[in-house]
Image (cartoon, rainbow, N blue to C red; front, side, top):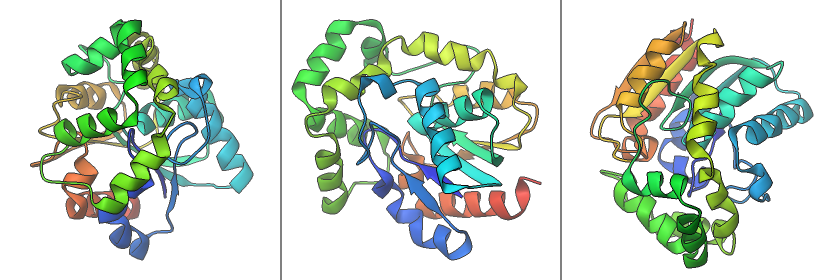
Length: 248
């Protein structure tokens, strides 16, 4: 199993599920290039660029039959990887990101970052702190990051906000480019979403599930955008069940 970290967090965002997941599966967690503790710059800020990085990483590690779990920015990366490359994936589990067809509903702030360069410029000037606070405040319902996680997130994105906000440049066109092609993905795919996500509307999950030819939809209760952190036990059980049996 490969876990892809969300933004503006890191692989430590999976701390609540880590023990349960690693007891049942061999798990590799990756901070995508430009996110978390991994090096990168604005040239990495697109699903296609991240998909190409995944291809190189999986080739280098010689991984096969991968169960690829991609929330948030990891969703776009995972979809781009399987669409653009001769992939090594046995199943996908994606949610809370770009690639859903139909009306792509986003929070007001994310829409502003996508539409206006001045918003990205100002956000970059303000630095990582406000981004992390925004994600924590609006992204989670039950979860509050601990001191170790907050310290890791701040160190990961210190001085890098002007680069990572480029993820939102041409955001809708990047999303549409993926959404127009997801119907070609015939890999078993679990679409998961927090039912109370106010950043990426849960209706996006329904549209994605309807477009994929071989998918299953799982809505996590009492969970927001950071559903894996809000409901770590439910998330771990969902992923373990998917990997061990349900994807078949």
